[in-house]
Length: 227
Image 1 (cartoon, helix red, strand yellow):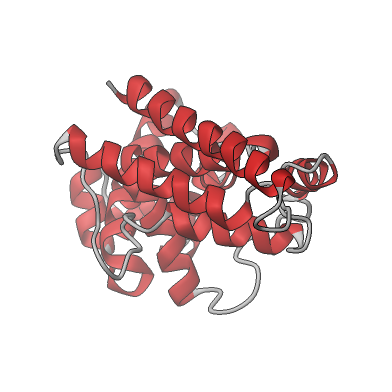
Image 2: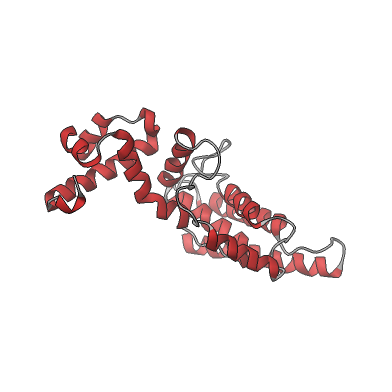
């Protein structure tokens, strides 16, 4: 059934199905999700579900497509402030854990290797350009290719996300815990990718001091926004 042919009541039913499916897929993945549960949660019969989406795999495709923009572009990269970018990603993962879970299930069950968003050519073009510009300006270590910088910073920001193998943060955690993690994350990113200069030189000391101040400001700014 084409979207243009769905009545307003049908649109409302479709919306409920997508919302219920988002929760179901985020929790159980594609293989573990059950159409019966989605139908019951949405209060829409299975015949309508199949009429709108065809089957469970296509329903996941619809859910994933709807959330792709948020997953890929929820936080714009600021190449001149990678610590701040990492902290903002931490907060985004905290606010929308379902996005991380959907992406994780897509990785496990759909695209085990390579670019998870391979069907979206150019999805990281602006991010890589921002990092490259910062490298050329001497703000980010130029010895590490921009794609690797983006991949590592993103992974670091997910240290406490639902994809973590160590500890997953919750919005219910004390704010002091979040502040401590933001500070550690900003400092780690600054030390990993901060302005590149030979250690022990005046240039290196100045770069470290400036980057340290930027990392501190990033953590303080994120904490203030969260408060």
